[in-house]
Image (cartoon, rainbow, N blue to C red):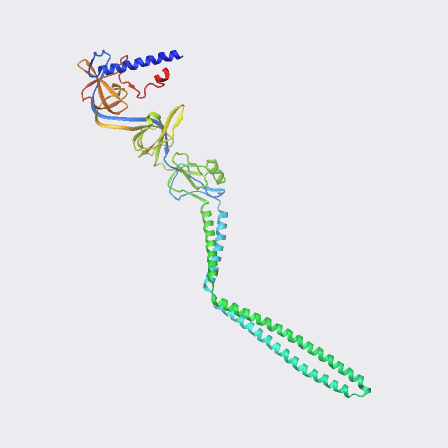
Length: 484
């Protein structure tokens, strides 16, 4: 195996040395006449265009997947079909809104109550409330006066009974003192009965006084309390009361707004204008199961993509912004730049449209061991008859020169950084060094070394390797690998 490698590398070295030797020897000198099979071409003035070709499929530049927010619900209506054009804000579908409407009604009632309470706090007492407080205070005052009168009467009764009972006891005591022995016992019994009557009467009067005093104290407390309440009510609401009432209104308003949002979300609306390209749900199904069936994992109402893979209950596409994403080989991808013009051909539809390169992938894609890069070409004035997914061939203009000298690309031989052509004149061939510009697919721009009208030799079958370009990096797996 090692001997075989030496032999192969030796042959390559001899071939390379021979080709270089011939080219260097013949620069500026004559060569032998070409055989009858030689082909020639004339150096002409014209346009040279370099391009890169690739294939891809038509897609939209932007798709929006629209889903119901929140927990969703049972789908009750679907208003659109695939192909429909919709405007921003247009209703697309709806779920059952019974619970949402009930919540909104309850929230509005709470808000009305909070607002009424705030109005009451801000307004202070009404005339009726003031009259009510005055009447209550007057009643408390009358109750106090009556209790005070009752106390005075109880005290007067106690004073009168004390005087009367004292007189009765004194008379009985005098009768007992002056009684004869025969009636002494009877007089004693009368005196004792008078003393008992005096004690029970005065005890009863003292209890009446205590009860009356208790009623006075209670009535006084009630009167004082009512008077304080009337005074407070007459002062109006405090800053703390106003702040509390306003906070209740604000909280109730938030609840109404939330309930209204929940109700609004039962109707799915288009976030922007577009064409319906997918409808994933049907009436009677759960909106969440429809969204999951569309492979949507977003909790947002909308999700957009530029790769044509958006998902949702409804997917909207902007068919006015069409593009073709194609894969360009690694060697050609270095020539492609954003902003370059392109021609997009849809062979099946017989349509050709203009386009512009809008994006180039920075990460490669390897397919069957071939390194490629995605290139996006946006179509300008795309025909309305185009359909998403159609196969397209993209030709990207990577360079152009106008009104320049050029020769067929096969006439140019490049060794490293040196390019030459073989010029024929009156049967004499001369290898001539040239400077090249744009290297098109068919023709190559000549910036110096030739003039219009000159004739160059083209490679012929079985002839020398005219038009051959040695890679500047040398032989792959180079000589060093074989000789090492």
